[in-house]
Image (tube, rainbow, N blue to C red; front, side, top):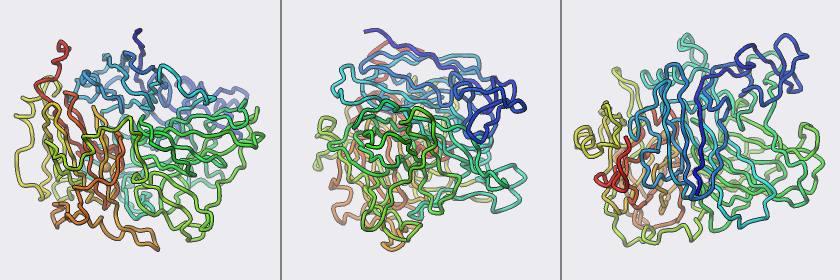
Length: 618
Ligand SMILES: [Cu+2]
């Protein structure tokens, strides 16, 4: 079988500039033209627009997002990453690709490889074992938020389902206007934000803090817009007239769509801080798979929530009225409906690019809308009429197709060889240090050594791992945080969210089975979180345990296989996987500032068998 080769070149670029030469502006009708000569126009493909605000971005192959890489199942994939930055180093992770027997291609700088230095390159080589929607992104600090991300699709070799007319990859991400590394550094060092400049630290009230409809909060809300395939518009509350930029939006062209033609959308949340809510006016979403794995039954819904790092495959059917265009909408779960955090793209049926006038379906108590992948049991109430007009379907409503289930992992009587409780907690700030997100009050710190951890896993763990101590006091410890599993062990993680924020959790190297999920208790009138799930109890030191009521932590209530899942505030979850892929695998929160601040742990799987299947490549 032939090898499928790609080259990805990482560079800096300016948005709204023509080849970094001169500034481009967008006119009211979305045309891109020279800033002082409107007769000189440019096509969308010539300009990295983002949301229309000129800023430095990081890009692969001069494209935001980077190119979608398409490969076939079981194909050997070779990807060379070139670092053309003048100073920064990077590494690139292929999110959801299991990297069986190729842990050195997982792309976690300092862990599975040395980060690629400026002027150097690194070659990934792996077999694309699983079909589905994946993505790639930098795994060094906040470079993903600067634009280093792209879609990765593994197609089946034989197409069994001929009914699809076509497919689109939609990379969704929240977007910020400042230089993200600077912001994140400040956040890590001092726990503070500055929306415009360091000067504005002196004035309060300049930050839009985010509060979700369930009352959970996220402070990391310097997001100025949401992008759909690198296109968006920002809302400027200080502007006098035009309160939004006029940059061109993304079009999904279905111009020749036959009646009832079916299209597949591959949705990826590649953002840094926000879960996103996706919908298309007058087009119900038939959700068929997540993280590459099909559901037992498709779910037909009006809206879909996609957590950071998650992917969903959705089928839509061409509508009866194909003489008009329709809005594709991406929103957050913001309780206050901040106008900054809405994005739109256009589903284009007509031969010309007429702006849609479509409206979202009205959700009422009599005809409620269905919303899938809620991290809580009730969405609402509706801002407009204060009514409960959305029916939440949570991950508890989702089941993975039987072909993808491992019966042993679902066996309630089976006692896993490795069982670890991870409390998701924030280490409070003191006079001496900033607060940070952690597992068990430990902030992950990579060891400072000259070889990647993977190549000497046992030695590194034995010499650099966190000292054994009684957890439960937020001493603010930062060390190399690990879990050890032997080959073929079943690993069970009990994850308890004792923080105010929700956390999208991602495992490298394996899929996990979610066998149990408990959500917070809500106030049925306000939809706000009233109390943690009663099946877990946390003391004042955020030491949490299962109460054993309702068979908590012993009885399964779901069977869902994924590589990324959101754990909401006040909730808990039990996940299992089998340690059959020797390597050093990160398990971490995918909220970028949380990862940078320490909410991650490395799982050392079969340390002495890493690279046994082949000669060590170094
Ligand atoms: Cu988090």
